[in-house]
Length: 98
Length: 482
Image 1 (tube, each protein chain N blue to C red):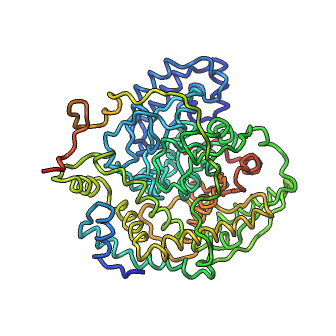
Image 2: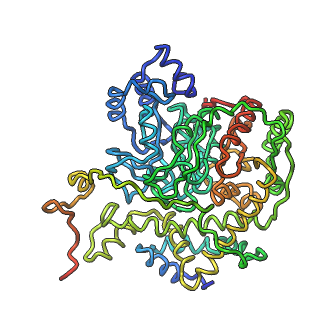
Image 3: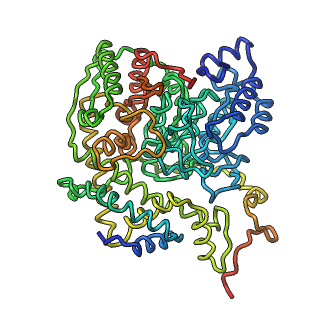
């Protein structure tokens, strides 16, 4: 496992698209030893690496072909209801091309 | 005490006899909610509920939910009703559709009177991390004890006698442990048994719809309404739906129940242990065969870290849409990236960021095999171990928690057996998708505590049958905090 430093935490946060304040970083660093010790409990289990990873509780067969029944689309007024910036019936976003 | 302190059958009979009308019920519940001092609510739908009850469809009069006020955890979409999952990032968000669970309840005539406070985005177990502050345990009038989470407001609302049922969600133990702290029945059916459409995802492979009731019958009745395939949720099951109320009183003679020895032995609270063993004797007196079963202690201790790594990692992708562009209160920036970073930095609390950082770290290319994938492998070992018990036994029975509701801020020894095993083992139910129910079994210092029963996937009828017989023995049903 990569060594955990304050820098590591900041990188992990940046991958999640947010910033950690110094205070948040210090608080998390103070908990890291416990978290790592808990994580190590998994490595201690004999034969763990011989297993297949379990992704869901059990297999679910969910492939089906739905009937081709038309349903009403979302009303435009409804769709825009939660947007604070509506321009000409569209959601306004920051400019991306200068 | 009014009608809101009763179970569904009593309320229904009162409606049928004309002792009370749905409108009066809603008025009673709304009034109680408005006077709630446990911080159980994100939003009280007073006007919406009064409007809906006036338009109630009389043809649903036979349903036990007809005209019954209910509370929904704030991570379920409710059309035209604010839904924040107790996170600042979703302040002001008003869904344009209702979740399948809400639709099915409303179809039966239930009236949503409030959205319940919760741990932010369902990522917590204390009921202290929602953006409106801590939810209090109604059994403790000094407001020092937690009610547990993440379904904290849902538990508090029913425990305080505001509504007879409430909907929560359960990813690790978020209904089943608060149920223990609040003197309630907390039920999480099999993974896929109830549609999750419209439930904000936290960790998709572990998330379950779950709920609180005052007695086992009401839990069985709700499952009749909520179970069944929904094409809008690809993980919802095609498995046949039973009438879950019909076998509740069946004899449990010959049913085999396993107590996991290491879980019980990691508990030090004598009152809880004494009450638990009294219930074991009662189950034996009803003809059940109850055995103590050994399980690898190391595996039990690994349940919590396995849950923590998997859930934190899955949460990182499930919450990627909260970016100020697709969802979430936008904080402006010069570029797309700046908008996302500013929105998420301001919108998420420190506790949530902690989860995401651990999840992100576990998914680093250089850590992924050692942390995330290894946790998934460990999950298989844990589930295999419990499946092995279920090969021989109909149910597993253990205390739901090692203590009564803790005092807020009390420190745990995070590496002790009591914390790692007894306080966190319930997540095995999410890992294996097992149906799992907590029922009250006793009191200590005037605070309730419960025990948990789990069974093989889709064996809800049998599980509810055993839970109902247990409830008859304890006589602890329809509890309301006094």
